[in-house]
Figure (cartoon, helix red, strand yellow):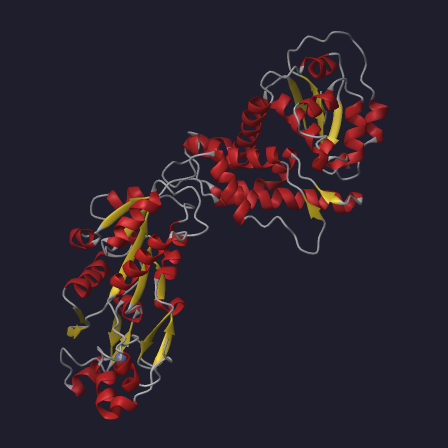
Length: 500
Ligand SMILES: [Zn+2]
């Protein structure tokens, strides 16, 4: 490989042809496909759905739009296109629209090249500088998008079609020879869409009555909520016609995919802190909350439930467990499913409620979602397990006061008093595996079983009395509860959950 050209003369000699950006992206994609390189690393669960369509759109050199609800990795996919650009391309130094030294668009660069000839220095533009992103909002103007001119200067200069000296460039010209991503396209005012279309189709646009010519080379990519996009009148037809492919994104189809995404995105390995070990059933419950929310009629389907819900929820779950471990001097952070209640602040803000949900309130809706998520995961894992002896213990009048701050040792100590409870966690393989021994793991498993039985309505739980027998369950005896035991495990300031 010869040395990188530093002047226009060297560039001409090197015979480096610059290609239109869509051709460049296509060429690089073809090379990756031939080499069997991974495409869009970090995008999980789209291998058989979104990625093939995306590849086809790029091979076809299309502008395209990703249609999907929030939190479906749309922006991430668009940013992933950067990897398909050449590592660097030559440009005229200082040119705001990244002019190709061999084919400059703007009058300033043409004048400069005429003046300096082969001595003109060359700048090399890295690919990250060739991606421009804009969130569409109704107040975005043509000046923001395309540019603006000073009408007085324009009049003085006798501005004509090929003279852009007085132009202040907007985002689209600045994306020249690169990728321009517009998020939430339907929020862009109709007349801005017209401007966008004109510049793409005709290469010129009128600004304040002055025609401006800009033959830009841009790959345009968009995102939109599907309903907004298809709503009549939201997108002007000629612009829609210029979008070659509409690609639908989706939420993870399986719990396993969802867990893989959250595992990748959530900040759970905390450098400088205690070791963190999140049991798989906690991860499953966290995902299941999102699955349940997406299916819940109290939650607005139109706006969706972002994958950011499980991601931030898991982070708070780990933090709550970390707080407990630090307070109790424990050496390993093992989250429990009840830590999800401490994650309500990350759940309630992640969905919009339908009227029925509004009546209940976001917090209650979230609590119900957690309970039914625990129930779903627990039922799947405890299929065929005999839980009767534990339920009977509560039916006989037993009750268990536990708080999310209760130390692992205390939880295990109390659990050992409930016949069959710790055995049940062992049988289900929740605790007792070589990698998961120790009180924090057992305590987490006990907590899962109790919450699971509560979700199945086999035992009840109240904030002031904890876990106890299910409502309406026959009391086998009139054995008295033992408040003395309960008191001994009470931690000041802790919100207790009593199981009975
Ligand atoms: Zn230029």
